[in-house]
Image 1 (tube, rainbow, N blue to C red):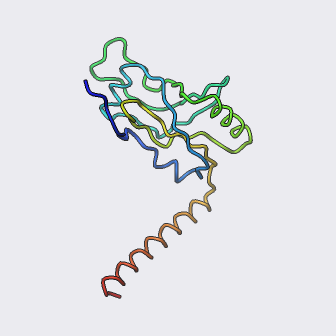
Image 2 (cartoon, rainbow, N blue to C red):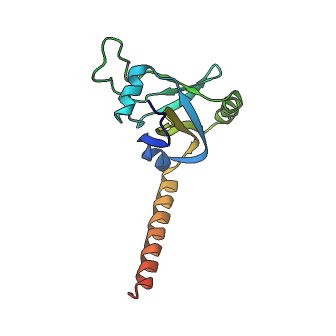
Length: 158
């Protein structure tokens, strides 16, 4: 069987960028069992309530929903179990220091296949206040209106 190349997004957490200000991102591998990988290949996963924690020098991904594999047997996996993230020791130590600073969280942004292996894009993020979210929406609307106006001007319309 030929080796897979490229990347394919399985699930993304679009709400995370709305609720958090992303300070830094990390790419991490994830320890999975066979039926989880088969379920992910079918494109079935949800990162809606997911978060990561650092426990005893290891990073764990919690509340990721990977539904049971339809054709699995009694060896099927539990859909919301905690899963170990695979990072370098230096990255884990950085994350321990940053999360202990206070106010910072580890949030998964996306889950994808990269060259046949499942990876998670993990963000070191700070929660946004309601007024920050409103400011971001206003900026996005203003940017959108400017690009529309530029397009109309280029086409010779008002």
